[in-house]
Image (cartoon, rainbow, N blue to C red; front, top):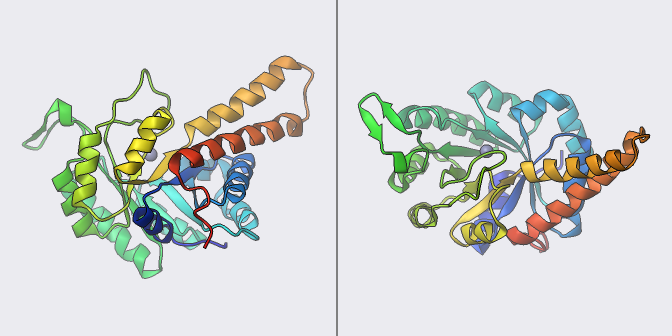
Length: 286
Ligand SMILES: [Zn+2]
């Protein structure tokens, strides 16, 4: 696969103050729509698969498809594991040829998260693969530490500094008020917290669950240090809305190419809109 490590893409974004899309692949049409859009607007790209998507597509199909998609490209592309849950899964993806992995130890204690993340970082870095980690905290009491409700799941700036320092991660996903999937109501992002984390740490920061966040809020987050923005739900919605429209209009429709093709176009348009918001268009030119 014609891939670059994610850190190469993100360090450049960090230097120049824009964000790169971490766009999830769910099937062939997603991959095609995403890569075509990024190529057209000359944007660096991070393709990513969740463990669930890997299972759905099949791991060798993922690498086979990405191999084909990146054969003649001019833009830098990374292939990244999204929300890897274990050391083993991260190693599996590295063997498959991924150029980046996320180890998500955010549900563990701070110390355990550091210990497990560090292990992944040491192994991944020894073969030139980048690592993203996540730091946040759930509300309630664990051992004798109580997390106040207002701080629940939010990343603490001073912990972020220590975490990055001790693990050596290449990128850090921060919890500042977003959530995965579809939102009920508009999320309120804690920009002050984000800017404090950004001032105290050197690594590129990652925003997860950005589908329900307004374009203006995403732009603001990018100016405050976010260099990677994960989008999945918005593309799923665009694809499904197009397929539903075509099916509703023509109950006789049976050729998948006649609805998956337009679905792919809908994803492509959405990807271009997102890249525009992130500011990564025309950044893949020297
Ligand atoms: Zn996520």
